[in-house]
Every structure is written in C-alpha cells, then in structure tokens.
Image (cartoon, rainbow, N blue to C red; front, side, top):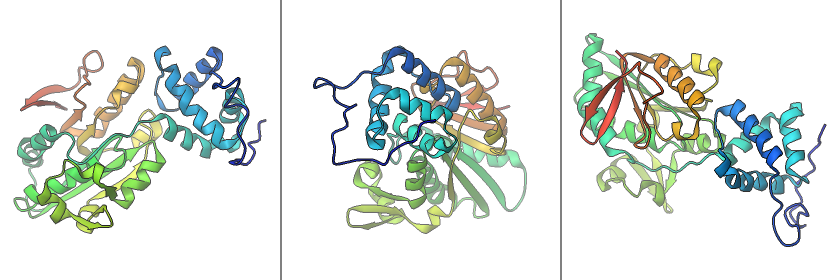
Amino acid sequence: MTELPNPVFSQINAFQYKSGSQVKLPDDVFDNFRKFIYDSCGIYFQDNKKYLLESRLLKRINFLGINSYEEYYDYLKYNPASSREKKYLYEAITINETFFFRNQPQLEALVTRVIPEVLASKLKPGKQKLRIWSAASSSGEEAYSVAIIISDLLKPKYPGLEVEIVGTDINHAVIDTAKAGVYKEYSVRNTPAYYLKKYFNQYDGSYEVIPPVKSMTSFKTANLIDDFEMKTMTNFDIIFCANVLIYFDLKSKIKVINHLYNSLNKGGYLFIGYAETLHMISKAFNIVNFPKTIGYKKE
C-alpha cells in the first residue's frame, strides 16, 4: 500500500523531468484513471483529452512528491486514507469558469415568467416558499445572481415570499469560496453598477455579498451521479445546471438528468447551458421557449 511522503518544495522532482521533458502518462494508466474518475464522479475524459488529464494529475503528483502516475493511482484506488486526496483530485480536474449575471436571458425568464408561474401554481394564500437549486454552482456567482434579482425585482411584489437557494458542487475549494461570498473584480465584471452598489460591500479591491443576500443561500458539496446524495435533493421548484452535461458521456448524462427530474416539483423548471441539450437524453420534460433561451418544464 502506497504511503505518500511529505511535499518537498526545495528539490526538483525527478519524475517531473526526464531528459528535459515531462514524463508522459502511459496509455494503460490513463485508462485506469479515466475509469476511476468516471466511476467516482461521472466525468469522462475522451482520448483527445489525455493531455489535459495528464497535466492536471501532474500538479498533484509534484505537490505530493511521489514518483509516478502509477503510484498516485494506486494510492487513490487502494489506500483507505485517500478520501481527502480525492477531494483535491476533483479540484484538479474540474473547470470553474463563472461570473455574476453570466446567463442574462435565463435570469430574465426566471423573474418575468417562471417564478410568477410557479408561485401561481402553488395556490397557497399568504406566505409562499420557493426553492431553487444551483447545481454545479462553482464558486457561487450563479446562486447569488439569482438571489440578487429576486431580492430586487420580486420581493417587493411578493412580500410574503420565502426563498431558499441551494448551491452545490463536487469541488470543495469553490464551495468554500461560495460560502465566504467574497469576489474579485473579474467575477463581477458583468454586474450592473446599481447592483454592485446595493448588494455588495466593497473594500481592498474585493466585493462581498451583503448579509441579506447570503441569508437566502446555502452551499454544500454534492456529486450529481451519487444516487444516495441525490435522494436528499428534493422539492425544488427551479434547477440551474449549466455547462455540466458536456463533461459526461451519454450514460452519465441520462443518470444526472433523471436525478434532476426527480428533484423537481411538478410544474418546476430546469435550465441548462447554451451548448447543451436534452436531445437523446430525456423526453420527460416539455420544452418552453423564452426570449433567447429555453427551459425544460416538468409537467
């Protein structure tokens, strides 16, 4: 059983360099890692993405100071103490490119049509509760964007409305960022000045989401292909799951979409990314057209 040594930062890792170039990930070990990652979280690295996996694994290997891709794989696969390292593996292989108000057509559809429709269907006088899930929420910009526009545009119209927004991601590091709610200028570059002034505290080049917006949100780690975890994600009225399906093969896409369907209340809506489609994945939803975007409704 492989034991990982402490990181050694003062030495050049002999594994990283061989005759002046990086050692390549052997094909058989690439297949082992690909299957391990796929079984763990559903992400599938195609053959043409081998270079990408190779470089990202190498970062962990060099950081840990171990000797080979094979040794790292054995540690992940067979060492009972490797559960923490799996979290770092997920951080290494996932891409977390996001910013506030990234998908404005979806946000406009949300506040002008979807939420009013969902609330009307509940047929409950007085206080109403709305549950929204930002699946694969990355560092939280999507969830907070939803909270901001609801606070600004809908709360005055529905004074008794209670809103719960849950953000999840498999990457622990980005979830920690989301919980803190503090961002640099790059993340807020598309945020209207009005919202920056009203819903953020600004200091030292950082932008912190104000407490009333934070109170509408919660964040936690979750694996979208984990059957047990997904059984706990229920009774949502709206789900955002953008730019996630592109990392899965067809089998995993079907599994994830089935989970999301089961998590939605009747009459609820699913929004996915611009480059994604449910064609060949699910016929359970009705397609609803909105200006410059579409939604998938559970009837």
